[in-house]
Image (cartoon, rainbow, N blue to C red; front, side, top):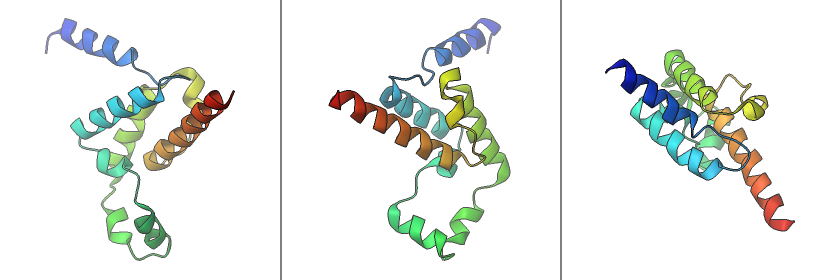
Length: 116
């Protein structure tokens, strides 16, 4: 990859950082990036039934597959693709919790905007 290609890729990623009004587009693009990097599985929200069984300790094998290197990479990628205004929501260590938090915050904002 030429230096100019790298710079272009960096500039393109800056244009789709998560701000206050672009969550849906950001989520689609971020999911695609995480898939390409091979770490979407550590971020992907669990279905409600799996979440309950994980809390009860029945699905610990699935959680063990989430190695630290993958967790760190996923978290770093998410953090690199949010504006400063969103950093308050990405303080968790677990990228799945970060993803869920961002979704909650922006769905609530969307609902609040529609109601006003």
